[in-house]
Image (cartoon, rainbow, N blue to C red; front, side):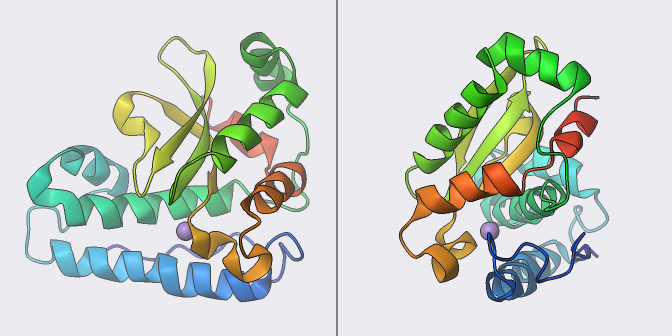
Length: 197
Ligand code: MN
């Protein structure tokens, strides 16, 4: 059975960038539903006792397993998203990550602008990501719906959810305000560094 991991912060900890009301639905309903749906889908199958990330990799791109992929990837994506947010986290990268950002984007400010532009520009539901590619260079990418970068050989460092359920209660149609506030006030750059490997 797959389980809903506890949030790494109190439900009101991200307020006012992300309200407790949004988190109660986003984590308590949406994220939980992906977990419940996944458990229903894998019950009695070869995937029942799989590890979550390897399950996502095994079913990615397989038309007969679309529902399992969508729910498993959304469980993984949301847990990764929560873990990258911390209102008291590191607001700037340091050390190796800072050097890689300067090399790949020119400056931290340039990376933040690229991350905002790309994430805001995702058409419809999806995710914006900072990733490390196979050449150990950093890239900003976006994915639609439940798609994940790691099935394309990209190592995720941070993500921002731009499904409407992530921001509509707090920002309505102002996706750009939500994305910029998350980048400036919630992304924890020490968490990003921890995923460099
Ligand atoms: Mn979401």
